[in-house]
Structures are given as C-alpha cells and as structure tokens.
Length: 131
Ligand SMILES: [Zn+2]
Image (cartoon, rainbow, N blue to C red; front, side, top):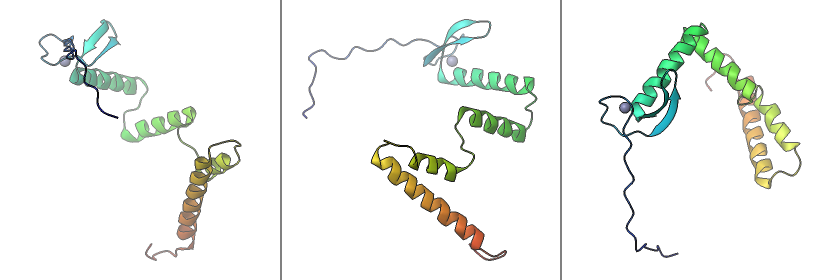
C-alpha cells in the first residue's frame, strides 16, 4: 500500500518539563508521588523515585539481602500465577484444555518433548560424566 502524505505538516508536540526544579529533561510520564500529588517526571527522576520507593518497601518488609528480595519476588510471582511450579504439569494442562488454537497444542507438545528430553538426559547422566 502506498504511503499517503498528509497535506497538513505534523504539528510539534508540546514539551512538558520535568517537575523537579532545574531538571533540563522533558517529562515522559505523570504519576502520583507521596506528599507531592501528581507530578510530571523525566525518565531519570521517575527511575530515582521508583528506586527510592522500592528501597523503602524492602526496608519496611525486612528484605535487606538480595536472597530475601529474590525469595519475596518468587513468592509474589507464584501468587500472581506468573511462575508455574511444574512446567510439565503446566504444558499437560494446556494439552487437556479444549478449543485452543492448534498452535497452542503444537507448542505444548514441543515444550513437553524438550522438557522430557532434558530430564532424561539429566537422569541418565552419571556423576562426573560430561553433559
Ligand atoms: Zn527530571
């Protein structure tokens, strides 16, 4: 399809300044900050606020080591359904779900055979044997 050129030139979008005094960067988003209300933030200041909030959350919840933070994250992901405890059980549940697109079954079969191949290789390997 040929590209159609508009007779009206594109209007430049207005630049919205970051809400931090003296920050030269344009805002990329607007969000609510504790104690400040809705604020326009540049990418760097948004990241700085997000990191500060994450640090505060970790302190409040006693997540002071990387291991504790990782454990907490895995537990939360599991509660969202993001991490399946057993990938084989997950792919089998896909195969037993009716009326999915054919590609879903093909992918599930492929994933299952790869998982089973990997497990068998691990099980059949002798200690000290190269994999
Ligand atoms: Zn800024």
